[in-house]
Length: 71
Image (cartoon, rainbow, N blue to C red; front, side, top):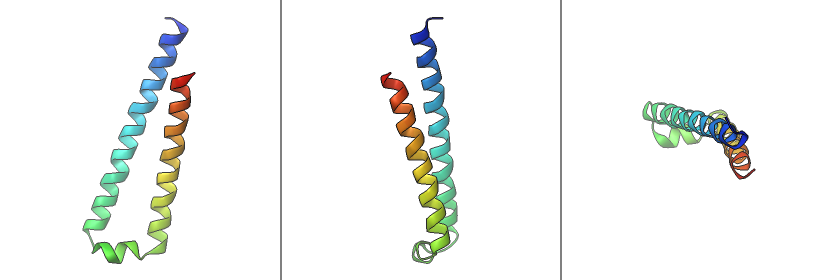
């Protein structure tokens, strides 16, 4: 397998894994929000912080995958 083909395969696997993780975070958020009113959930600092950290981690993974796609 050529190096470029291998890199493309690795990148596609990273993007696929990332998309599953994003879907999981969205599902988790919807379940958590659905159990209480949205205003109650958004006022809880601990929960908001956890979601922010997860989004930040996903964003970093997206940027890394994007960098690999252009090299």
